[in-house]
Structure formats: C-alpha cells, structure tokens
Length: 405
Length: 222
Image (cartoon, rainbow over all chains, first blue to last red):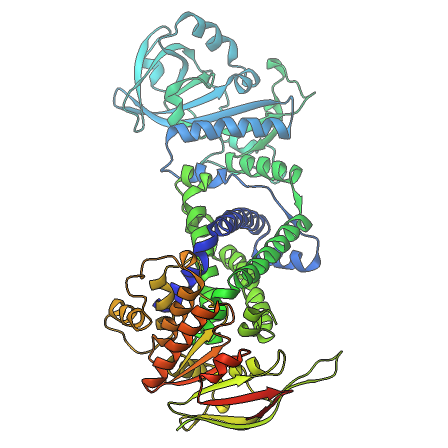
C-alpha cells in the first residue's frame, strides 16, 4: 500500500493545478448534492424520494434552514432564537403579505414568593382582545416598568400604580412591573397553545381553550409587548396568529363571541414549517437540473481519471517496463483519485459555512442515506473512469507509445 | 540457461485491415552471458520481440522460457515480477522522468519489488558508480546530456541486478562517440555475466556483439 501511495502521489506532482481544480469541483459537487439531496429527502421522506425519482415527478428544493430543529434545540442562545424569530416573521409576511401577525407568549413567574402566570400579547393581539388602550397609554408614561393588568390574589396586594418585581423562571434579573388595573373577572384569557393545546384541524383557534380558562382566579399578569423588550428574548417562544386582509375586527366586535379571535392560527413550529415549505416551493428546482449537475460531475470525474492516466502515460509506461503490473497501476490511479476526493471532503467539511456557523459537522449535516447517495454517485463515477482506463490500457502498449509506433 | 524461444508468433488483428504478422514462428535462444544484436529494418518486428521477451505483451503462439520459467503462461502480476527482478530495459529515448532527479528515477524499480532494500541510497550509488555517473544523484534529468541520460537509463536497468538487459536502439539518439561509450559500457556489463540483447540499425554497434541476428518480416536469421 505504501508503494502504491508513493506512485499515486507521484502521479500528481507535475501538474498540481489540475488537482486543485478537481478538488474545488468536487467540493462544489459535494456541497450541492448533499444539501440538495438532504433537503429533498427531508421534505419527501426516503420512500417518497425514491418513488419520485423513479416516477420522474421529483423536484429538489433550495437549501433548507432547518429552523424547526434550531428552534427546538434548547442549547441555542437567545440571540439565535431572536434572530430566528425575526426570520419567522419575515416568512410569515411572505405567506400572508399585508396581514397582521399576532403573537402571544406565556411563562411562569414568581412575585413575593407566590407563583403567577404571565401572559404577553403583541399589540395586534392586544387590540383584538380589548386590552390595548390601558396598557399602551400608560406605557408611554412609565418606561421603567412594564405595565400589567393583574388577577387573582395579586389584586389584594397591589393597587393601580404599585410596582413589584417578577422573577421570571431562570432569568437572573427580575422584571419590574407597574399595575395598571385589574383584569375583569369575565375576561377570557387567550392563552397561546404552546404547551397547552394544539390547533384544531382547520387551523382555527379552538374555542375550548378560551371557554375553559385554566387560569381563572389564579395569580396572573397580562402585559402587552412590542417585541423590543430584551428580557423577552430568552422567552421567545410565541404562538402566531395571522389575520388576513379584510378581516378587520374592532375591539367591540371581538371574535370571542364565537370562541375565536379569528385569523389563522399557527403554532410556532407549524408556522416555521409552513413558511419554509412556502419558501422552498417558490424556489424549487427541477430535478433535471440536479441530474444535469450530476451528469456533469460524473463526466468530469470520468474524464479526470482518464486525464490522470493519459497525462502520466510516460511515467506509467516506464513503470510498466520496470516491473509494474496493471493491477498495481489501477490501484495507484484509484488511490490518486481517492486522495483527491478525500481532500475535497476535508475542504468541504472545513469550509462549509452553514456547517460552521451552526456548529454542525458534515457527518450530522446529512442523513446516512444522503451520504450514501452522494458517495455512490461519486464512486460510481470513479468506477466508470477506472473501467474506461481498464479498456484503454488493454489497448495500450507502453513501448509502442514511447517509440511513437 | 538463459532465454529460450520456441515458435514465437505475434499477429495483430484488425477489423478493418488485414492482420499484421509481426513475428512468424521464431526459434532462438539467448544463453546466459551472451551479447546478441538483432538488426533489421523498421517495422520488421524487433520491438515486438523485445516486448514479448520482457513479458509486457503475450504472443499469439509459441513460448518463451526464462531460466525454465515459461513466462508466456504467467499472469500479468507474475510477469511483472519477473520483469522487475530479472530484466533490465534500456530504450533509445532513455525514458527517464524529466521532472524527477536521478536518484528518484533510479528508485522507481524499487517501487515494484517485493524484496526489501536496506539501503536504497547505497544501491543507487552503486548503480551510478557502475555506469560512471557517481555524484549525480541530486541532478535533474532534464539538465543532463544525451549520453549521460543513457547512462542513467542503464544504471536504472541495473538497479535490481537483472540477469538480462534488453536494449532497444540504445545508441539511436546519440552521436557516434557517445554511442561507442555506451556500447563499451554494455560490453562491460556483459563481461560481468549479464546477457545483453540489443536491437539496432547500426551495423557497427551490431558488430560489437558476439552473436548477430537479422530480422526481416517477422523472421529471424543469422
């Protein structure tokens, strides 16, 4: 093996530029094919992917951001989550341009040793729930504390204008709130479905959640957020509500009458999934382009093996005279190409920006199936090249080449 | 012993053209320690004969025995081993790798040898000294003259200490003085017990060999 490697490397030395070009080419190929195939398989499922490939109706999708996975990963920092949240809103805007996007989130807090439930709405939701004016007006007055409405035992302890601190789960700094009033006892809280419920089958908000308010009489604070509050960053895990154009609802005509605030509801994951699907659907690529790229690559690799052979005819011819068997020669050529592919893979792993930024290495970036798919393509190309070499060699006599006969 | 050839025939078949009979039933033997010249016009089959003797190609019919081993029945791997260990090949155009230095060129046969060489550097030096090129280890082949290149080619052929040296027009690309030196060198090697089989157009070169054959249309005659 050592000697074969030695010969394999000596096939390279005089024409390094060719090899560099090939390495770049293979890197591009690997990057494209792995991403494209990975996305396709993720979207379609392995069985459907194979089925579609054979039925010819297959489309490949553009790179997939994997927001769902990233959001679900508790190890991701609040910065990443905030960034992703912004991205989701942008996607949502694409799904329903000019629509209003309502968001709601909830978390468990603690004030004076008592647990409380905190529910936050953005201004879109707040307006639709009839709680906007109170908070919005007063928030203009006191910027040092978050204005809240309170319910439950909190009402006995705090009056409007009182301030108190709320410890939020694992956040180191407490949230200072100022009481703006009590929640009406009949006020039906709209809770985000996150952790509480699933959307109904038609994706409209389920009336049961509102009718069966689990927070009735419990310690609760309700606030309205603008989305700029830094303390919210670590809590960003809201549900999204999209209100289509023309479905304007006044505060007096809240959809609560029929148990719904109207609009189309998405859980966060669902929203991400839908936006991504919409995005990739718009940007889908026909399979033919991928096939074309693969064929290009196959021909390139095929040609490269041939090139490697022809370019080194003299060296190989001399080696044959000196006692190299054809088997040895095939092995050396295969090794030479293998070295090139390996170098390409290393480069791909090192310089794949997505992999680096997300801290995901090549091995986890694609499923095993995807990797197998890609490498089968690459090595099928090499095999084809080797077979072509084999045929060529069978027609080739080194001495005739040298003498020009 | 040495090389014994029986009924050696080589025919190149072509779909479009009529078959070319490069060798037509050659019977000849090259005893150990002999120095033989094969003369003949271009295309008469001289190189084909050397190819077959070296085990690079296989005959259409006939056999070649190299020290009792019938190389025509050996596998490609086996023939390659025999070529590596028992046969040195010298060519008209030297066939050295220009991008390598002398030492690297001489080391090439070792790549294909299963024998372990304890001191490659010493072996290279020994071969170079043998052809009068000691001290040229680090020189790039492209910087050498024609005569020097042929000496290096001979040194490379000697690396595995072969019993037979096949030389295909070894002086064809050299001036007469240098050609004389190369022939003298081959004669010296012959005196050490190696068989030399050389193919040449040059009558003067052929006359320096004890045995001479002439080849015409694939047939060998004295």
